[in-house]
Image (cartoon, rainbow, N blue to C red; front, side, top):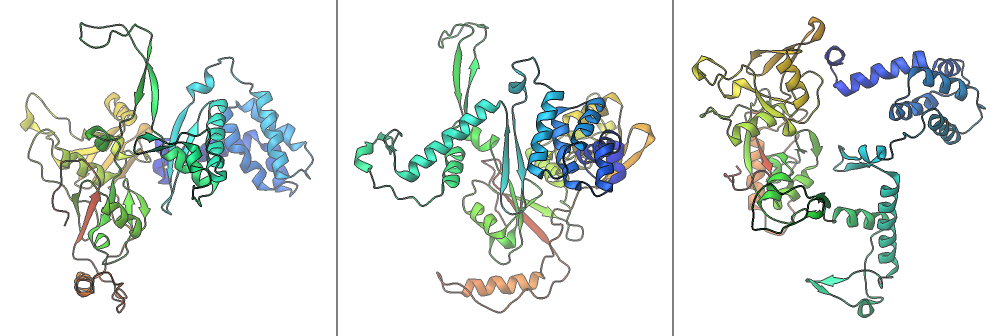
Length: 445
């Protein structure tokens, strides 16, 4: 799949999905495809089957059996009815596993970041647990809307309140859907963890082996600020309201200028990232030690933004910082030093493949690496421009705009001539990221 992704210049996941769909359609769904070509069925019916088949992990023989069954259905069925018939047939072909814990083993949470300042949080797990969570959220949201708060817990500044005193006095214009979101987003993550055998003498609580303790996410403190951070990269001119260029969340997802300024107003820390004015690629941080400093790691991740293996989209923020040329502990001067030119981001999976010799790395230059892939294929990768798609205005225009804003009366909206009709080649490009590691607060500009 790495080879296919390198040839198609796409992500590994996309290459795998394209290849699988081609096999499924031309071999597994031959009858349905023939009906589509003949005009008896719409292509949408075949498209709707793919993710159902993927989820069920059906072998080819069962896909062909499903194909024969669905092609024999009445072509006049609605798309909804067609899909329901397909789902039931898949369940018959692929009954629920005998393992009663199978649904729990699949539980996970994923995020999809969109380009309109929104995101989707996907939660997968046992249907009973998720259905119960949904119904609790819906019931509580409806109770708030109807002011039926007798059964709800009410507090003010840590003190319990009597619902009778607030009957009919709640003012809230949020829709049920909005209330459900706010209830879930504001909840405090927690779980239970089993206690193992005691490993040494201690003065703490003597909890018996096998008992459970509650683990709650902290609501404040250094750990939360360091581990649960959101990094926003934004041009300094946007923060100063000099222009309206968008920023990026966690490396590559665009967000509006208004969102960036609002986030900047609540930022707990800042750090500066400089980009090359010609290529818009993040410039290297100066290396002064053998071990990567926090600034070096941050710069490597901001520069590459994903794993450097062709087609891998694993975020650099979750990657390991790997040496291109192996560092020698016996003779550090022989090469492989911990300097920016010798560092790049690799996900754990591909790092293991590199260690095993399945894939090999060749450094071509400061901003380019080449990978020797299985079957002798070679593909190169380069760091993507940080400001791709953005055309910075002339610095002189920005200065003029800033001076006009500076002279504008406080509290009044400035309305002046359009200063951004002419776009020239940039002389500099400077961005600021917020928020990141607390305690490191250099001047933002």
